[in-house]
Image (cartoon, rainbow, N blue to C red; front, side, top):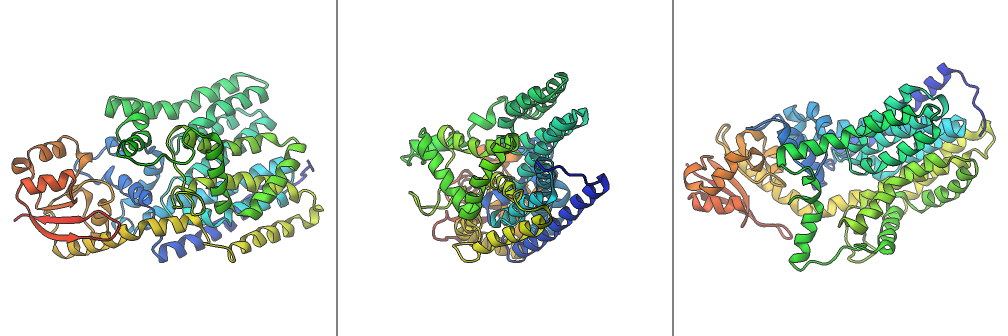
Length: 504
């Protein structure tokens, strides 16, 4: 590696400059997505926003409103923003945490790459190749969990590299904090822990540093197990409970559904994930990443590449063993689903591609990095959708956005504050958000005993003036029993029928 003799103030100023550049890129993309209404196209984005809101805005506020399956940190990050009514109603609240994590991820990737490659030129290439990826730009404008995880991963990478070079206990503490942030954001964060422990054990001159990291990093997963045990009497509720991905998949199979591609088939799982990566990262970045991998490995920069490769490997493992599907338009069943999982390849490919810039004379590195990143980004303007994940969210949300707007428009006109409304928490929560109805005025599954009792004896215990349900669900059945009047029925092609009930 070429050595860097720059002073500490110079290094700090370059980091600050990159952070400002990333913020400018992120703000532009986030505002464009929000202005066009794309922020909540993903059903999961809508759900994350509303889960965060119900932690405080609920008849039964508290930690139990976090639920299970989805980890807690993304929802906690959303709370300060989602509790502003105007930001919740518009969806703007969902932009702030992901945007901040986008800047953090790119900045830590820059800092880690500069430490590995010995100069700011190659590091700038890494940061720009990550930041100008269309799917990364879209996801940072939504309340999805991918950008918070990538920020945690990049911080973890930088901290482990700092520890390798400095043996500082502070690096261990930062690495542990980053690991806990990752493991409380997405489950692939759990997968990283043993590998980071092993790296630190090898790199540490004082082995107690590795032990300290292991103890501190275990806190995140243990906290989530304790949460599930306390509120659901099953520490593994997120894994084998009725709302877990595995349970949902098994119910689909029992009802005659097809097996997902890659289910207990390693080759197919890897093929589908690589195909999704081709759509998300693009051929130019993948080719440069593959070439750069050989250069980086030859220069013994194996740890960053290995750590950044672990999340893609985790997804392949999940497709094989956990019923996690990825559908892409050019492979059977020719659909659009979970393509965003391939965003995990982008930091790896960008970091590897940065190694190629080290061949350029130092005085040309910066301009080479900028030209390279802009050239790869320009390819997106001439090939397919700018982001397959945005296209997926648009296609899959078309019917949901239609009936949500119709139902919200009706309730915004007819609902009187304080009337009360019963509904199943899920997709229908978007109707209350758009109509401007606080969640504390609603009765739903998250309210526990009150909801269960109302569903069991609706003719006695269901007291809300309004009801919102999908045709045939448990709330719809209860509203029928209680004698509510059907005021509006919304039928949209490709979606369940939405019913709005009223009782004087």
